[in-house]
Amino acid sequence: MCGIVGYWGKKNSVPILIKGLRRLEYRGYDSAGIAVLDGNNLNYLKRSGKVKILEDALKGSHIKGKIGIAHTRWATHGIPNDINAHPQMDVTDSIALIHNGIIENHSTLREILIRDGVKFRSETDTEVLVQLISSIYNHNGLSLEEAVRAALQKVVGAYGIVLISKDEPDKLIAARFGSPLVIGIGEGEYFVASDAAPIIEYTRKVMYLDEGEMAIISNGELTIKKIFDNTVVSKKISNVEWSVEQIEKGNFPHYMLKEIHEQERTVIDTMRGRLRVEEGDAFLGGIQDFLPRIESARRYYITACGTSWHAGMIGKYLLEEYAGIPVHVEYASEFRYRESIVGPDTVVIAISQSGETADTLAAIRKARDKGALTMGICNVVGSSISRETDCGVYTHAGPEIGVASTKAFTAQVTVLSMFALMLGRRKQRLSKSQGQEITRSMNKLGGYIKEVLADDEQLKIVARATQHVNNYLYLGRGLNFPVALEGALKLKEISYIHAEGYPAAEMKHGPIALIDEKMPVVFIAPRDKTYKKILANIEQVKSRKGITIVFTDKRSEEIERLSDYLIVLPSTHDHIFPILVSIPLQLLAYHLAVLRGCNIDQPRNLAKSVTVE
Ligand code: AGP
View (cartoon, rainbow, N blue to C red):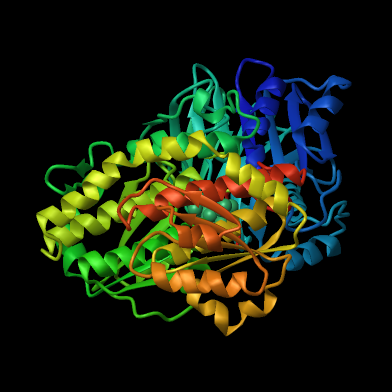
C-alpha cells in the first residue's frame, strides 16, 4: 500500500529512485512522484497514473541531485491525480514529504492550519502533515528534525514517512509508526524504502525501523532515535537473502504466471530441512522453544486476511483433526475489535505473506496484550509480524510481486500441514505410519505440481468458453471448501468476474437459485469421503443446465458424464490435494483475466500489502 523510496549518497538519485518505484509499483499504482535536492534547490514532479508516465515526464526535465525521495500511491484521501500524488509540499515548496498510511486526525489539524493562514492545494491527509511540520519549523526556531518530532507528537494514525527540505539540504529524515520502512546501508550511501525490493541491487545490509522510530541521515551518518523521547537507538544490521532475479519477471509475461510456475520449487523450499519423511514427522525450528506452551494451549486462534485467511481455514481443519485442539479462524479486522476468548492459555497464529498487513498486525498486538502466545507464519523475513510475534515459521516462498497471492498460499498451507502433523505426532494422535503417509505424499508434491503445470490446455479451453460470463461459483467440501473460497477470490480479483465460494452442500440453501446455462460451477471433487455427496451436487447443477467444471483425481464414467469440463490431477493424500488443486484454479483465473484483457499483476483498486485499516 503505497511504495516509498529515498536515496542519500554520491550518485544522481533520479535513476535509482525511478527504478526503486518500478520495483515497488506492486504496492500501489495510481500516481507517482519524485522530489530531489540539488544543493539548495528542491525540484519535484508528480503524475497521475503508472510510474512509466512519471519516468517519461522526467526525461524532459532537468531534475537531478544526490538526495531524493519518490512515491507510488494507492489513494486513500483524494482521487488519484497530479495534485494529490506524493511528494506533498509545504506552502513554500521548501519541504517535500512522502507518506504511506493514514493520518486519522487530519481534518482537525487541517482546520487549525487553515485558521493560521495555510493554503492547502490537495485533498490528502499527507499534505496536512507536511504543512504542520513546516508551520512548526518556521514559527518555533526548531531544526527540521525537532519540527518533525514535534509534528509527529500531534498526529494520530499510521505513517511511514520520508522527507527532505531545501533549508537543510544535506538531510533526509524518515519515521515509522504503523507502516513499514527499511533502511539500506551502502558504501557512503543510504536507501530508505517500504520494503527491501528497491534496495537489494545496491546492498544486502539493512535495518528495519521499529514502531515509533525515526532515522536521520546527514553528513554521511545514520542516526536512529525514538520519536517520542529522542533517545538514540542502536540497531542490528540484518542481511537480506532475496536476489535481484527473484524480483524480476524473467521470461514470463506476468509475475503472477512466474509465481504460479515457481510453486513446483517453492513448496520444496518450504519443506526443506523440516519434513522428516521416514519418521513421518516434521520439525519447525522457529517454534521449538515454545512447544510446551503450544501443546498445552486450550485453544488456538488463527487470524489473517484474504488469501492468508483461506490458508488459515485449511489449517483449522488439519489442526483439529491431527492435534485435537479447537481452532477459531477469524478475520484480523474482526479479531482486533471483538472480545474473543483469548488469554494466556491461547495461541494466536497470524498468517501473512507480507507480514505487514495492518489488521493482522493489530490483531497480534491485541493477542499479546491479552497474554496469549503469538506465532507468525510469514513470508517476508524481518517483516513487522515476524518481528512482533513470540515465535514463528517462515514460509520461504521467495518474494511475491503479483498482487494476487499464489505461491505464498501454497507455502502457507504447506507450513500449516507440517505444523498440524508435528503436533499430531507429539500428541500421539497420529501414528508413525499415518505420519509417513502424509510426509511421503508431501515429499512428492513438487513432482505432482510439475505435472499439473506441464499441461494447462484444458484450462485454456474452459477460460475461452467462459470468458464472457458475469458470475462463477466454486464448490468444495471439507478441506476443499477453503480452496473453493480461494479459487473464487483469485478469479474476482484479477478478472473482475463476480465469483463466490461455498461448501458444496450449502448450494441447495440458496446459490442454486443462480444456476442456469450461463453459470459455470467449479467443483473440487477428489475421491475422498464426501466424493459421492459432491457427485450428487454436480448432478443437481447439471440438471439445471449449469456449466460443470470438475477438478478430481481419478477419471470415471460417472464423473465424465457429469462434467462439461473435467480436469484430472495426480492422485495424492486427501490432505495434500488442496495444495495441488489450488494451482490449476490459479491458472484458470489467470487465463480468464488474460482473455478479458485485465491488468494481471496490478488489478484495479488493489495493492499488494494492505498497511492501512
Ligand atoms: C490475495 O490474492 C490478496 N491480494 C489479498 O487477499 C491478501 O492475501 C491479503 O491482503 C493478506 O495479505 P498478507 O498475506 O500479506 O497479510
